[in-house]
Image 1: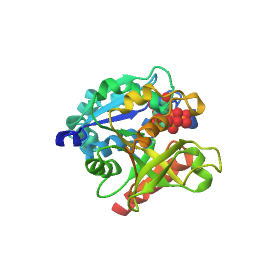
Image 2: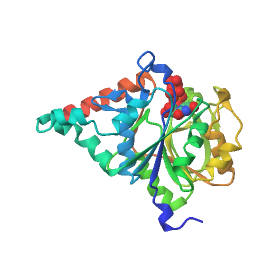
Image 3: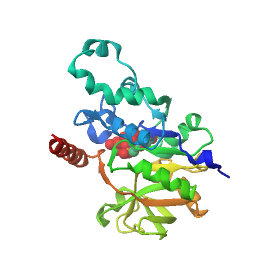
Image 4: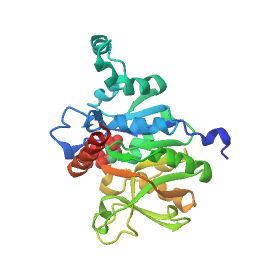
Length: 282
Ligand code: UTP
C-alpha cells in the first residue's frame, strides 16, 4: 500500500540505448537523443519536462556510443570559462539549472532487447518506488503543465501505472502499442487490453501509447516474467498487460501536442513548430 510520500514521484528513467536507425547516418556516432530541435537536444526537453513534474533524480539507460548524453548533463569547464562574462553565458543557463537541481545516474543495457528490457535495466537506479519513463524522441509540448506533470497529478488519484495515449489515424495504429479500455471520463480510461504494434486492421482502438509512462515498481518482476514478444523484443506493453488485467493501468489522453521525433517527418514538424513559436515570441 502506498503512503502519501510515495505519491510524490521523484525518479524518472530515460531509456536511450536504441540505435536510432531511422536517422542514419546522423546517428552513427551521435545519440539520436542529442539531435537538436532548434538549439536544444531532444533529451534536454525531456529532462526539463521531468523536472517540471518534480522528478529530480534522472536515470539513463544507455548503450555504446551514448557518452555525449553524460557530457551534456555535466559542467564543461573550458567552455564555461571561455564564455564567462559574455552575453553567450545565458545560452547555458537552462542546462545549468537542470544540472544544479537534479542528479543523474547511468546504467547500460548490454543488448538492445526491447523497451521492456531497457526499463528492467533501470531497476538498480529506481529501486522500489513508482517512477516516470520518458522516451525522449517523443517530444511533448503542453502548457502550463507538461505531460509528465499532468500524469503525476493523475497518479495521486489512481496510484497505479499510467500510460499517455493519443488518438492516431487508423492506418497508423500498427506502429504503436494500442489500448482498449473502459472510459472513466473523456480523457481517462481503465485499460482492459493492450497490444504492441497490432497487424494492420486489427487494432482494438485508435488510442496509441506514446513515450510517457508512470510505472509502479511491481512492473520489474512482471518484465522479468515476460517472454520476448513482437520483433523478438521484450515489450513493456506485454508486461503492462498483466498489470492491466488486474485493473491497475490507466490510460490518459494528455493535453498538449506531441511530435514523433524518431521519424524524419515528426522531427521536421517539431522544428517548424518551435521555430514559429520562437519567431512569435520575438
Ligand atoms: P525506438 O525503436 O523508437 O528507438 O525505441 P530506436 O530503436 O533508437 O530507433 P530506430 O527505430 O532504430 O530509428 C523507443 C525508445 O526506446 C529506447 C530507444 O532508445 C528509444 O528512446 N530503447 C529501445 C532502448 O533503450 N532499448 C531498446 O532495446 C529498445
